[in-house]
Image (cartoon, rainbow, N blue to C red; front, top):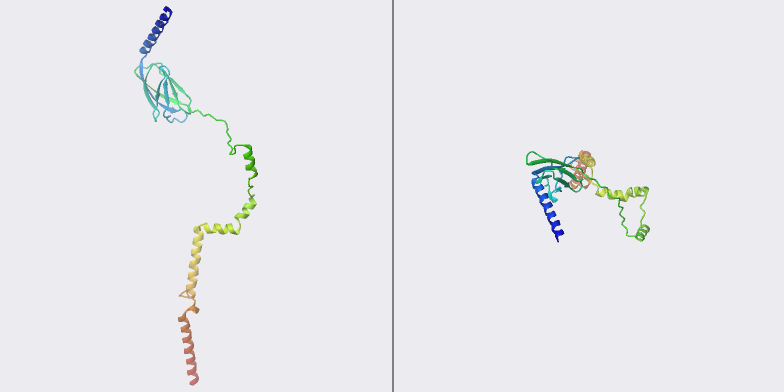
Length: 216
């Protein structure tokens, strides 16, 4: 019984000593911004752990800024996914504030190569391989693309270029001007009843003039 009492007293004294030592350490407002060591870009939402004081945990904001109360000599650990952990020991400062620029190095982890296959077993692979349709070679594909059916299908859906539209418009204007030079009405005179009437009238007048000449 006396042994347990002595152990309890020793532990109590040690706890009081540690507590008094911690109270003697100066409190400091520790603030700073966390940057990427390579690109100098802020690292957001970094986990900040005070390893010297009950592993108190804090989180930096979206701009990489943090601020909390710590003691001089405390070891502060910074952790973030994709970065190597960084440590900062708060030094002794003349006032009650300490500001630091924390730099974290990006950590690249290469995962082993994984090759996915669409078949669950060798039997499924053999079945898929046996039913595989071999594609045509380049010559056969070229012949299919240059066939009259393929060209006609492409011509039906392919829009005309600006050069083709300009050539077609110029050709239409040329045909229109040529027809106007031949016939102002742009019509076949053989199909016009007025033209036939004028022809019959001219023939009749010619006959009359010839008959008058014979009578004289």
